[in-house]
Length: 242
Image (cartoon, rainbow, N blue to C red):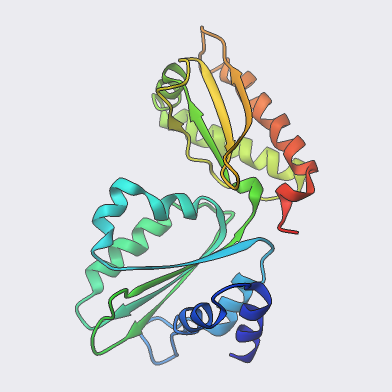
């Protein structure tokens, strides 16, 4: 516990007492349903990058399906640790969230959770620690209509192809690149792709794909992304928080 508290203080600037209380309360003992140790939390906080603590209610699962706030934060974090409260009637709620986290995580990420026995649920019975949040994984990609329609047309092809591409970039730059969740941008021209830095809202790059875009011609688009990430990786501030 002492090491965890020290780690929290070393990585926090504001609201240290509140953050310390939230994270320490995530610990689940060996007598709980699913233990969660202080070492697991310390290891998560020790990763290079920023961290975020989010507290949610079980009922928030409904709104999450629309906002995808948790989903997008998962996509930016190298580690996600979750602590659930269980008053004896929370099994189905916990199961929904556990499944959701696993469905939206990648093999490059660490995902851990614990379940704590309680007499009654607090207002926010779920506490989530997102950590290892690097600027290079805080990139938003938006697509014009034709590009978006193509990459959504064949998951069996594009999902593994994009996964391999992320692996290739990760090996090249030495930083784990997490799945980016591209979204439709109706304000973009149909064949354009745009990259934004979510840390400051600035445009990183915008380029146009061929109007005759096919699965094969998306390789040109992927090559452009490869070199963009390579340039970003050479920028020290994109790799870590200084």
